[in-house]
Image (cartoon, rainbow, N blue to C red):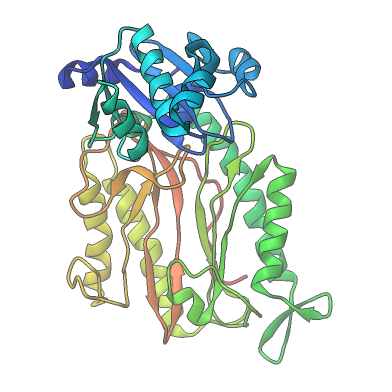
Length: 390
């Protein structure tokens, strides 16, 4: 995938600098996006209209030549790195090497992302290079709009996500109920056991994740509580899965809320309201609409039912206590935002729509789809039914 970097060219021109500089490993999504290279250790990417890579050592050099999208790949030894380190120590030695690398491309001034290492920035300034922080995070902004290829990669991760969600739902459906708790194969069915089944399913579909949410009862009343321990019958269980495809590195994200047994009237009412709120958000989602307008559609539904929202009460600790959604791509949380004060949504942006309600006295309810904004509305990338009772 070769990204369109014309927006970056324009941004550098506006800033009046010669290039854009990153120093990070490829877990940094901007670094991976710009370089097209996956490496576990930090390396340097310079963009001056083309992509140039610099590695302190030679370990990744050959693979970077084969796999990256760089116009050139270089080693620190090309710029006397070892000599500089011997003469000046590791920090100044690296600064001198990096300054020589920039000089070779006629680069005297660079913009850097907000997370750029301070030590490297100060070292370059001592070598006479102008380093200006890019407060706007232009590469992150560029990543927010996906190509058709990127959307397909997210769709692929979502198919794996749905297989994992189906596995979790099957465990709930086939569980027996003993003393108010779900049991599987003679033992209590725990959050940990369901998470294990989710992870195994994702691995079989080429995806992985660092963590997931299977939260029941009071655990589910905290939107980011991962959940633990035995799962109870008659209580809502929030399952939120956000895997990353191991090959293309793009994420998916989906939440469903299940109940094995008979939920009380409040849980049923909250579930129906949350489904209504999600529909209202999707009805508001179109090019030119703002993330704030989509978020407002959710708040309108909940507030009409006299339930708390952060819009109505910024100190609320129950009710709808988070934003409506967020962008998804190389990061599971990235631009754009679907929240108060969020800006205009554009075709190609992939976002979640995930209203929810939370109260320790009730538990939690959340329903989440992942969608892509299109030229005339949106396409829902989620193909998984909504059903509270299993």
